[in-house]
Image (cartoon, rainbow, N blue to C red; front, side, top):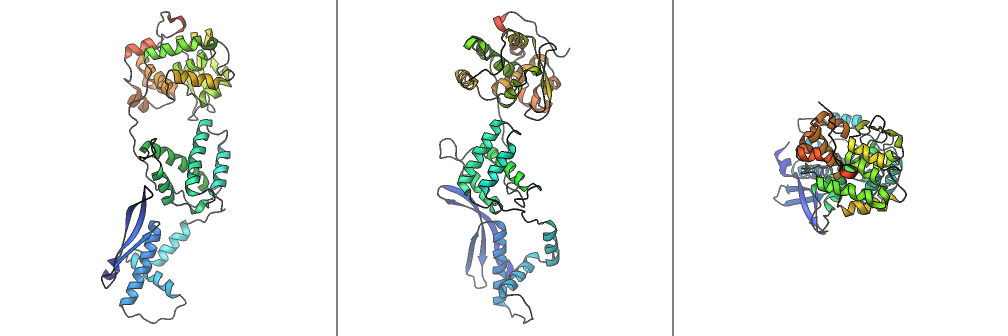
Amino acid sequence: MNKRAQRLKVRQKYVFEHGYKYATWEVFGTDGKGNRIRKRCPDETAAHLWMSAKEAELLNSERRIRHLPTHLSVEQLAMAEGLVARLGDRYTIDYVVDYFFRNHQEVNHKISLAKASCAFRGAKEGVIRERSIMQLKSTLGQFERFIGGDSNLHEITTEFCERFLRSLRAKDGVNAASRKTWNNYRGDLNVFFGWCADKQRRWIATNPLVNTPRFRVDNGHIDVASIIQARSLMEYVAGYKEGQLVRYFGLALFAGIRPGGELEKLAAQPNLIGLNNRVIRITEKISKTRKPRQITIQTNLYEWLVRFGGPILPVNYHHDISHIRQRFNLTHDVLRHTFISMHVMAFGSFAETAIEAGNSEWIIRNHYFNAVTREDAQAFWQIAPGQAERKIVHLTS
């Protein structure tokens, strides 16, 4: 490239507007007379296009222009010269244009963000957990309010998505949201835009979330209930409304079945709980990961299930479950975390725990191993109705 054409450059900058920090792209440099040039553009592509046109304009103003017959306008010639300057010796215009036409695809159908969001959520009904549907609805609703539901889906850029993610606030409403929150919202939007970009629809040419950053987050320490908490929970549940929720909490605590989606689906198919062979079968349709697994019914869980009959989810269970969870300050996955931690420490097998929990051995080893003592783990599997002394049934010799 001509040295004089290198006066202009493109850089990414961050600006503050209305209390938020946004990324933008700026063309900067000087003209042949030393005059300063600054131009803010919405994205990197627009910045390079403007820079190309400006460079061509500067070049034409400084040198003798050859008079050649052409059907191009002055603006088109300026853009062509700018493109040649940008390509230099690396590529030809023919090569770049051929590559573009081979790889670029126009959208098949123009649709608004609101209509696309509605269609997406409808397609996911019955496919993913109800809790996940509610989370997607919340994320997409916030995104629609930020962008504008009437906006054309194919016009939403990576910059718009990043602006939305940067606008997320912590619970105090002032500080920026955590990296985990950023990742969660980004994940929801990525699933949505990926669905819209699928070749069956082609509502957008590319997923704008592909180039947005995903932060590395340390999950830190997992929540595990202590022996006292686990025993107190089951004693309270046994005496609450004639023990009608014993089966629900027993399966969550002593079988590690995920609350919400998995337990609700299992409740509709109680025949999958085999008291005769002491195995619970979590089918592909029930499993959150869509991978079937089997869980051994340990002696204490067997006694809870036999002594307290009835459905897993009685009538009007939502209020009662919420009451018990609040009373014992139970986080969403604490009972499952407790099951996994107690299982691997009591029975000493990463493989068996991974099979029953539906996790990988790597996850078990790095997040659950040594989260509790071996003594507490052995005592955990003796928590039974009446607290009679029980022997531990080991899965491995």
